[in-house]
Image (cartoon, rainbow, N blue to C red; front, top):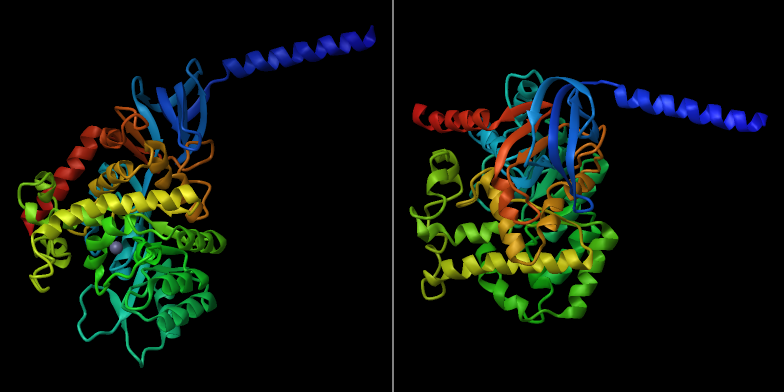
Length: 472
Ligand SMILES: [Zn+2]
């Protein structure tokens, strides 16, 4: 009898506690109501939720009837919420004033900058973002090293000659604020080895292309074994898995051969190479849109990008040769206008090869490589998404590359997810991105570090960025 009483008392207390929790009023800075959350891990949609944000973090996800007391309420009926996107391969150069609004207005709350940024500017921008005087994404920034071939081409790149102390240079770059070292493809395999050793000594990750003038299979394997964290663009990987040899003197040769490689894959070799990547935890950044972009150069000025060109500063257009025929200085009997078409198709080939790696279990992150030709910062990542879907990825897989896979690569649990305690970096969409990947562009608002930027604010930011061009 006594024990029954205890049990009843227990349930009574439990019920009271339950009722109290229903009555509890949750305080928060922001409440997003009636929203459909996209669970990017499982690909599920959690409908009709209340999401609360407090102190730049997600406070919790609650049922629709939850009582809350929020300073700001965002009505989310009919809208979809995804985590803030990370573009894992961009070049911001010294153009934060122009590019930051374009990243943010496109839902990109984090970038991995793959070199050419002025590190002095970086520390200033980070300060300004922290003290609230500048709106910008979270940044992970690489310092670019390349071989000294007599002519410098990219800004803020460190050209290595026989007399350069790679060790001292890498330490200096780390102290200057670089988050990782990016090695470019004219460096030799021996220089890659030296770079990887210096990076280990100074505890800074290294990533990059792979040496371009050496046999692809051995070179790619070498870089993976060195502990290179990411092979950018899949350069050389595609050549490494082919059962025939290709002439490979510069980056444009990649585009010319991609469709042919797909018909000449050595399955055993491919498997061996991907096993290396998995064993060594070598990641690949996708950037298939670079090929598409180069393939658009002869479409000027009537392509889709016409509108966005209004936002592109000349510095970037000149630096990345938007208007220069990339095939001009090559023997015209070898390359001609038809190459533009080949490049447009090469984008699809690259995406298909990325999908093969992804299906095998190789880790990928999505990057746009803006501002390469026609790859407009911010917008470029959405183009990359579309190309990857054309290449066989599902919309969910593509979303994952810019959210949970980016977080996994960066070893972070506070980004890329909509869960309690994660950073309040979120994108509100008007349409469901799981049905059509182009819907990632249907951006109604962005929440950046717990600050709500509605469509009007985002549009104003873009107008300001555009007006900057006229001021110069
Ligand atoms: Zn790049």
